[in-house]
Amino acid sequence: MSKFPIFDEMYGLSEGSFVYSSSEENAERRIPYNQFANWLDKQNLLNLHKQAKRAQDIFRSIGITFNVYGATDGVERLIPFDVIPRILAASEWNILEAGIRQRVTALNAFLYDIYHTQEILRAGIIPASMIHENAAFVPQMMNFAPPCNIYTHIAGIDIVRTAPGEFSVLEDNLRVPSGVSYMIENRETMMHMFPELFEQNRVRPVSHYPLQLFRSLTECLEALGIQNPTVSLLTPGVYNSAYFEHAFLADEMGVELIEGSDLFFHDDFVAQRTTEGPQRIDIIYRRVDDGFIDPLNFKSDSKLGMPGLFNAYRAGKVMLANAPGAGIADDKAVYSFVPDIIKFYTGEKPKLENIKTWRCSEKNDLVYVLDNLEDLVVKEVHGSGGYGMLVGPLASKAEINRFRKKLKSRPSSYIAQPTLALSTVPILTRSGLAPRHVDLRPFVLLSPNGIRITPGGLTRVALKKNSVIVNSSQGGGTKDTWVVDD
Image (cartoon, rainbow, N blue to C red; front, side):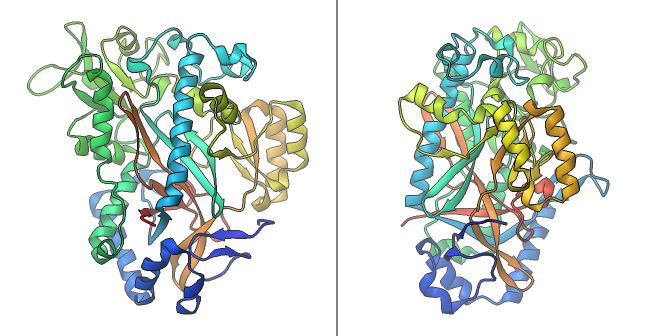
């Protein structure tokens, strides 16, 4: 599909698709993989397949599933897990960490500005219509500052790689980013099945994430003088695609997992029902989208939130994380302006580049996209999960023609990007190791005490040959991600 050499993270540059060989290519292996590859050479393929099945059995016993909306073959599915880890050197991770810190800092400053004086709009950096007419913009947040001016308490930044030192940001996820439970459970499963690997390799840990999440949330109120604030996690319920993660994180943090029906006002504060009576809540880590958190202020038919919750938030009675309205900063059209956002708020050049993006709302961009659909990836501005997108090089003529009609009827709903030569990493197939395309979602926590980034994150892998769609809802899987010392 790609016109360029594909960078394989285990062996370096490769022309097209191939199957990994073993010991004869030792000299060409990239340094981060050396120790692991030496172990891998000694493994029996049949035994690796048994371990892969064992991993799926572990996931099934724990209940690590996700829901596929609109599926006709059942509600819950196991997310495929590949036992071959993705490995990054500490020097590579340092590049990513610096770029992510810069990006999240700028995006949080952007959100504060957009909901206050809107200096970036006055400066003409971003068209005002792109903000004010955007469905992700929440005008009710105007002139309101969340505790410690933090909007993006939790972020997931999607990274792709095209060459040894070339990392780019594919998407920003600042609303309710998911997948962190898979990152942690992937590591736990690998350590359980292959303990010797973690004795031989100095792999940075990820298990501290739930504690860091709890600390990051509570630090926001502790900075304002509120000691030992109570935290609860608000879930839409068991039918949500990420319910396992909601329950997992609540359990790991030692906080209550609640639904909207558990909430009510008590003594002028937000409280939750418990067997011991009302308990005040100071912080709600919400996994419910903006429009559903409060039927009095947003979608009037929502049963997922609490009437008056947003009013309580604005009155300082409770903290919501992430802040309502944060989604304007991960809108895919706004994404194309993030390099300018970084320069505007930090005075620095971006440490991580964006992918070239055409905004179909602009006439010249739309003309170019319509003329080059066969070579582009087209996405919905508010789309997620790999839904509603076109991968031109893999699409049929009929699919392209149908998408052309969609673009012409609703151009402002789409952006387009080039088809990238995404890096590959090995996965275990029936015949041995084979390369598959990947992306990476590091998880970021922002508090008054600084930015915390869990080393590695969630590697999502396209299990189908030549596919670049890594989303689990579209047949993708996950891997354990290692950051190892150089």
